[in-house]
Length: 200
Image (cartoon, rainbow, N blue to C red; front, side, top):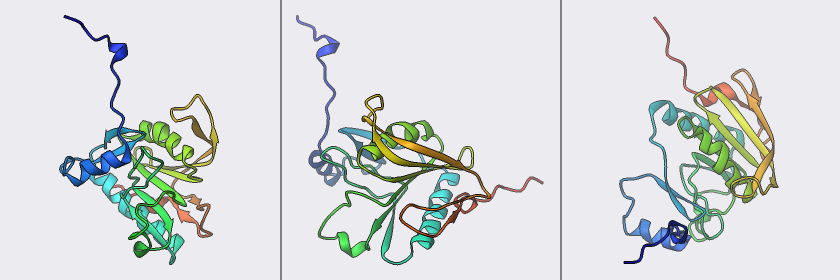
């Protein structure tokens, strides 16, 4: 009996079309997943601090961008033929009706991940993915350290997971503000996090 050497076993890489078919058939009805360069990735569980930060962040960004922009909350973007990430917030030009016929947006003016248990992943693979597909402004709302991490200037780099990375990064703390590349209004970092419980 022949054995198959592990070097000959290849992981299945899914296309967007295949992934969308699986979604339509209800394969992931009870799971939060996303497609990242052909791999179906299970997303981390959401706890209340994360949920609150997603809501607060989306509201703050909506105020900063105003009319003419749509802040998509935990909805997909479409990158190439093998990626459909679902960032916690993504700002696209236009409104909900503009994408009924054109389908899932293929870019965004600002992409935001709210991170706790997924922090290393969002700094690593997710950052490299967003840089690869030309997202000029990528933010991580770091719930663990209560800070905002801003990443800009995507550049090619063969040493990174998807061969791209951000050339500039900056860490902002509560009391400081961030200005999105595509909006002239500053956003207070403290507005992205829920209030800390009072110790009695």
